[in-house]
Amino acid sequence: MWALIVNANATIISSVRPIGFITEAISSGVIDTDILLPDGASPHTYSLKPSDLIKIKNADLIIWVGEDMETFMPTVLKNIDQQKQIELMDIAEIETLLRTSHQEDKHHDNDMHIDSDHHHHGEYDEHIWLSPKIAKIIAKSIHAKLIDLYPNKAAILGANLDEFITNLSETEQNIAKKLINVQNRGYFVFHDAYGYFESHFGLKNLGSFTINPAVQPGVQTVYAIQKELAEHQAVCVFREPQFSPAIIKKIVNGTDVRIGELNPLGTGIPITKDSYSHFLFALTQELLDCLDEK
Image (cartoon, rainbow, N blue to C red; front, side, top):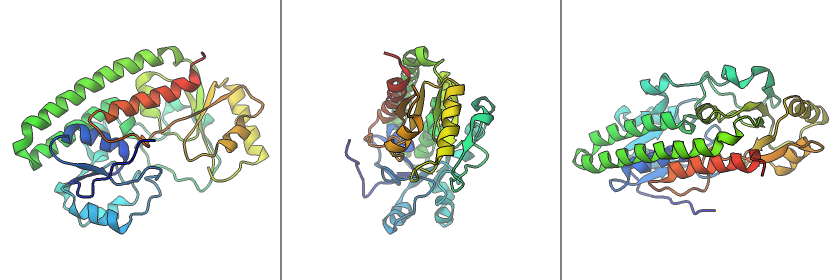
């Protein structure tokens, strides 16, 4: 596990780690960037600490996704100058690319919502950092804002943006080649977070199961999920780090379905200029580790 690098005097705050990856790529060599949420924290349920509030108050710029993702942010940002914020869901170019929370091609009838206490997203899927296309728009928006804040650093910022766009385009091509042989291998997830990535690279998500990660599922729940896995001939089911392996093993016990793990928040990946590409490659490898029949 890579060490988490924290910059106590950072002047740019990104709410979640993948947004910080993009921010660092553009701001590198100009200003420090920091991530608000620690590794392992959920943006849906995180409670800000006093030190977080100080960071936000002192930041030159705060970059966040939207009120249905970081539910704690709107109240905190009421007293922060609008010119010191970028709410990514409000960017017009991004709005035209948004997916609904359960896009038509995600098979509504396969979405089994079992945990009644689960947080429900708003109308749109806010996991926008998983779209390479949207990531480029985010980078351009951050670049434009930083040019306003630091006009004397325009040359460095421009070079950083060009490098990011070029590298990301190469990353997309490489990932597409890696995933081409698993595009027809169906799988289920326990968090409907990957729609942008799946759509971009033509992956076959059969649906999502929503269960409480802290509670052992009952017999009926296990049976219902196993029935879905069998009916749709799923190759894999993907959990996230917060899910106990024992719970998932119980669900797939007696089936040929493999268990994989996906990390949509880039947990453990250090903040560097190349982090966003590293993040996408890591997610790709996690998919291949389960879907690819070796």
